Length: 340
Image 1 (cartoon, one colour):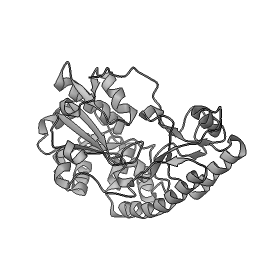
Image 2: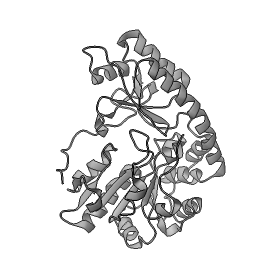
Image 3: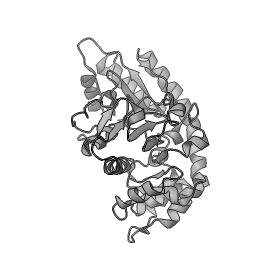
């Protein structure tokens, strides 16, 4: 067992104290977005009324979309809210000595939630009360090595974060349909729809997890998802929205190939990725640190994500962007930063 890491400032991509970046590579939102149909649904949402507190119709729509029983669908205010609530559930059920296993490189809220609930992070997944997996992973956008074998050894709760599955550009999921029924599947469609400002998510509980679902719901505030989140999740299930998403993936594949070629022409080393983002090790001018280089780019209206907060030092994560945005990055690098 290793001690739970000390608290540190939370680091995210997107808008910051400088405002909204003019050219933002730091979040993994679909650069083809926003999806017009989903955006229209959000704009037309009736914010004068409470949503149905039990979200009956929404659960049924999501269940039909995934081909599961509606009783297995749980709603969350966001993926991060789910992360904290499922961790709270584990803390309650596992008691003192409960542990959490994280991937080597992972989203910081997994560890943050463990700290908040005084759960230790361990290196042995087999003994953990809560295990996290993400595929395609973040920040690498890769498969979770050994995931198919890993799920066979059961833990109290295993969560597969599928935030980037809708934005998969290559490869295939590691788990079969049958194996997916043994884990909690966390879905956050706002990234795929280019609507990250709309906070809403849902999860599909494993088969036979009725008791855990009940406990999870007991930890929820009333109306965890507001009217705009409901509208987005309902739109997510519509054929027109899924058709738009499928078309966007074709565009993103072409943009990704161009962006990788551009980065490699700058001397960057790009890591493999199956998703709409990838990591790269920049070539820094002598005496320039990565935070300094990223600060200079930010001053020029361009934001990249330092992956140190994921545990991957010396790299940046870049979401795939349109050619005009890619060219803005290249121009900024050549205009004053040298060959970063």
